[in-house]
Amino acid sequence: MPATLAALESALATGAEAEWLAQLSDEEVREQVQRALQADRKLWTQYPDSLGSCLLARTFGVKALASLHRAWSEELAGRGRPWIRPLRQLPVEVLPLAELESAQGLSLGGLHVPRFVTDDELLLTARRYHPTAQQPEPRRKERLRWRWAEGRASVEPEPPGDEAAAKYPQFVSDGWGPTYLIRAEGAPRVALPCPDEGSAFARWSADGSRLIVYGTHDEYAGGFVYVVHPETLAVERKLEVDSPVSRVADGGGQMVVSTSRSGTVGWVDGRKHVLPIFGYEFALSPSGKYVATFAGALKIWSLAELVRHEAQPPEPGFPPRFDPSGDRLLCDRELLDGRTGQRIARLKPELGPYLEGGPPQPWLYFGTRVLICTHGGLQLWDARSGKPLKLKTRLGFSQRDTLAFDREGSRLAALVDGQNGVTLHELPHGRLVRTLGFELAGATLGMAEDGSMLVVQQGAQVEVRTADGALVRRCGSTSEAVGRRGWHDPAPRFSRDGRRVAARVGEGWRIWTLASGEEERVEDGAGDDLTEVADFAGPRPAGWKLAIGRSSVFTHEASGTTIALPVSGGWQFNPADPRICICNELLAVLEG
Image (cartoon, rainbow, N blue to C red; front, side, top):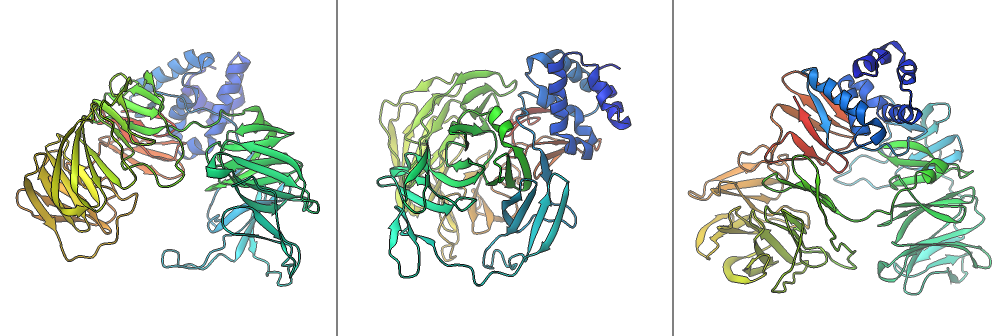
């Protein structure tokens, strides 16, 4: 049996997968291919056209599989049907032992925080909240029991609350600082161990024999976990990590710890290990052998296997994006060729945490000439080579500033929230070109691609001026009440031809033609990128539709071929060739 994709498809259809794998003589190759198939089995079973593309993504760049990968790519290309060609690897780290998703008659909605009853049985309880206008439904009155080793899940009524549950001992806090223990009604509160100037939370261990105290050091400089004797309050064990601790699960003498910047940490047999899982909601089994995670789906992992595949501590980097020309691609801390994905430079940004506030917005701009980061101060790189650029005139901006850039990134405009003056600077020098006076005391700012015009927005109004300060047009309502701009609200923007300007007002977009002042309204649902509006929309691959959920489903419209990838979106498309696309996990080309 040849090791072709066609033979694999036949083997899967006839139950002969083991025979197909057996003819891969090298044990390492056979194991890696088997893991790749297992990782996405649910996906390509539901979407059969996905098999080849998923397998290629999982095996890209693996030396032992180079010849197979090349042969499979040639085979898919020769079929004349759409497929997705990876330009980087989608690694198989650790496979869960079991997984449970919402299905007909079995919803995970409204549930949270898994709890092990035994090593083989897990409970999800109802999320506690009060109905609001945004969430009018009452809280769920059910819980879910999953006997994962048997593959059985059932929904059962929530048991009545125990009104006689003991109120004491209890934990109280003043908001920042130590947590206090009150042992009985009328008893004084006792401060639990906490670092000087730090802040702590507390809970009982799973077996109720110890206190677990955890939190942050002063100024969020690190995190800690203390195992404390409940009577003497002596600290029996300590765990120190590089960032604040937000959640702790324990069982069988082991711990799993969620941190704000250091990843999910396993404290196993007295040693720290960065685990290759996300720490949303999680629990540890009574023996300490299994970890349950809950983030859309419920998964069971072997703690020993997670430790064996220990990850590197996470390093802050840049979200993926192409420059406006499509020639360059930014991904994490790397500058890449925008068409091939080949590395051009490794960047070294300073991306430390903020104690209060944050950087001016946008904190990242990728021009055709200059890459700009405002996080931790203004940092610049040559967008072609990745070489760091030095400002000759020092510039400083605060969280109250809104910035705007031209297409190249060689012009920077800055507006302080609520003020009338906009400063215009030249990059990478930093020289002040001029200060422009606007009638509006603006909250947000935008710049035309060629740098010829600037727009300031205040509520439902916009004011457009040339880079020399001449008034172009004022548009919008002076009487319409609009809520204060939020930190994540998009800035006003010009169309690519510079003839129109768009601004988000309330729940929808408004677009004005600069020559006439004519207004067009785009109702909410168009998204922040004005994806359906000509000359504002970002690049999209012609002939393909994309649906994003827990996976990304690409549908080739002409042929009906549907290919699902095991990544959950955030896709960016190359402006020069939108078939080339990237998300946080994968860089690929839509072929067909």
